[in-house]
Image (cartoon, rainbow, N blue to C red; front, top):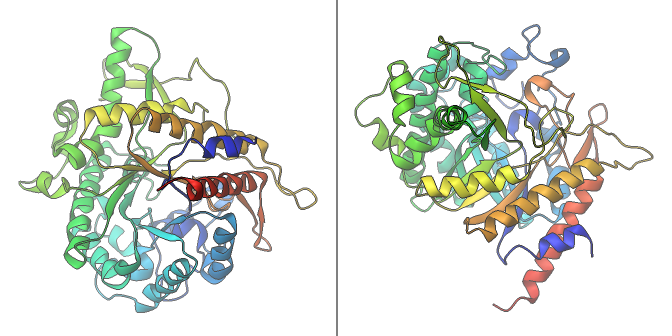
Length: 458
């Protein structure tokens, strides 16, 4: 029996398998249909910011090729598609006039998914903030949360009747810390003050969007997508174990705690609370009941205590794991049990709704040879990690589905087109799509799971 068939048998009837993408990474057509620039359009044109100056102006040209791409999703046999909606297509200036032509595109796209019997899981924000809002402070300014609520209302009013699960934000950790502290993502800041300010704005935007969406449609299934870190101590010392908890509060708890517990963790608040425009009523607005949440997992982190007297909270140092030296082409450690460990732990910490694995995958850059893409390392990565999802189910985690990242190779942010995560290969010159070995394996997994579900007693 193939590994795909063995794995399929570990998942219950009703468990959902899907694929995922994001608007800026695949759509292209950056200057068509009334769309205006996002912060990534500007950032990618700044010298030295993105690999070889690559931009998302064309990407996978999904804006024009969406119908054949939906046929490809149907061919893979998956039950759901996670996409993102581009704010600068819908409200090009961030606030004000709604661009009906932009909504028309998503109308057609969603209708195409419904016609193919594929469930629709959009994300409202996957990092493409309208550039006009950057002039007012972007995510460091709390007014952006209100603008996000207005955008949410416009989307749900037009599209909400065909949405199976709507996420407010994708990975606010990246959009706060990679973007405003580390400087690797748009807008490229390196400021703790800006980063922490954006953390609170993102949390506020999440709560604002949930309220706005439900005001339009009370029955809409609301969630959020987080890339919280599964974290291990570099040693058994008390100092390193304490460092893991500080790392948790700074990187995970900064979002999980206000969203699911209605508070900021004490250590985080003591260290950085003065950098947030935290007002009365904010935490109540953030702490909205959700129908589901999404967890994106790629690799774990290992940390130790930073003894430097001037170390800034969380005062940790990331170190290579001693457990594994295996890396993907992007350099990320492979340690599948991190997925299971994190989910088991987070349900002990918080009262949370059911979870979907909304992204999981690996960068391997092999291309077609005689029309075949033999990406065996990616296939093995999926074997391990989908096995870890089954392990989490066995341990009582309320998992509802799994989305492979990504449907196809695409624009990988600061890595440009140099890193390939797809289970479908894209030739960026011709836009030809080729299902990889891992894609056929995933197709087999999904088909077997569906066949088993059909013979199970009701």
